[in-house]
Length: 327
Length: 267
Image (cartoon, rainbow over the protein chains, first blue to last red):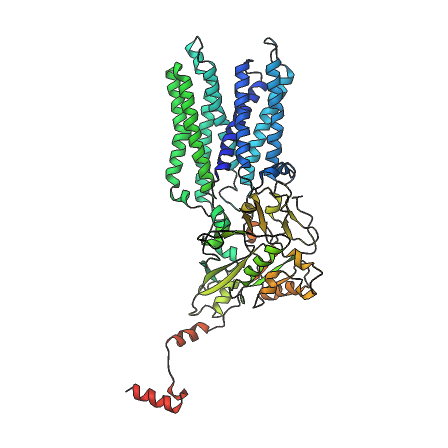
């Protein structure tokens, strides 16, 4: 599949945004979050901005972006529509939490309203990312997407990249802290949880790659033409000498040629490099903000490569009419 | 509504005869011409006369090569066919293969649509795009296994075969002409239009008679259109072809003058 930049930016940016909002929402709902303007406001603003940027990027993929509002209507059947509805609804608890943080008294503590908003924010983020993943994993025409590994990878990577943003914001907030141990930004258990999420995401991604490499073909040129009963079928002549929409959109070959190298670089950049940053930060605590920034940049780049591969490596069964033997 | 309607009894569709299709592309051209001016047009091309033309066609004619199978073990239809002598010495077949929307009974291209622009008609099963509602997200084209939907860069919307819904019910046409443009244009009558939901219709009988097949049934889209496979070659046709290739000459068949020339030159 053609990896359209608008869709790559949308899924990675809004994924990180929803990860950040989801972590924040869960922390608030459980009453674990410090009740400060920076501690709540920064992840809330950055998360909402990332999500909004991603949604804006996704409208660049549309041929008629001014009609985008129509996409809210078919939530009964369409995962894309459900995603739109979930994304729009998630703004409501975010807004509620934001207003509450601005208006609260410092000694108020976590009352029921913000905790409820936090829970709804976490739920909205989770549902939206799940819908995004289901847009792809519901397509029977693309075996590399139509499997059970896709949704967990989307959810874990959203939580992980959101966690990297959270670490950066927290480390920036604590850069003037008196104690070196506070300069890490996040409590060690939370940082450990983010590291754990990264390792789990990498493991599931590896299992996903193993699955798509070894999966039995979904369809063959024989079944696509109905000519299998006579013998071996091979494409002989194309209907057109130039490209058409189908060959441009669904006949992307570059990534499969370099799959091994690209997979290795997405693992190295996306997971190994940020984990190394965490380890170095634990040894040199005052460097935490810089290392958190480095971890975020490298991690985001790696996840971008991962997402690019997710599209570019996936083969659509329509290629059976254009020379593929089996898909 | 992009939820599918409950199955209609009427299932309009095409039956395409791969035995008689000669791959002339007349159906594709007639389709482009009609629909460019029809209710669902236009179908503009980019760079139409330039180096890299690109545009929407609802119908594309592929050609496939089929290398006959010689495996006769077992008792399946394939093996019976092979034992009939179908593949003896036969060279590969070329099969011309027109590809267009199959108006599936359970099409994902409809259910994935976020706007309600894609829909399946409850009354006759035709799958259409309302181009005034389409936002051009392209997801429906990803969901179609048959490549039936093409996106128009020029118009910013998805376009597809309409089964010439603006012809088949058009009362300003004579009844014989209320057929899709591709069916009307086919010079070898390889395309047939009718109700595949009615077991007694001409198209349904043709499918039963010729053992018509659905494409990629394993994907579960339940396509309505059927393809009639090429008729098996007669036993021994490969042998005859092989003999013909050796260019034997029987002098007794020749006129006396040519027989004399042949004799003279053969010395």
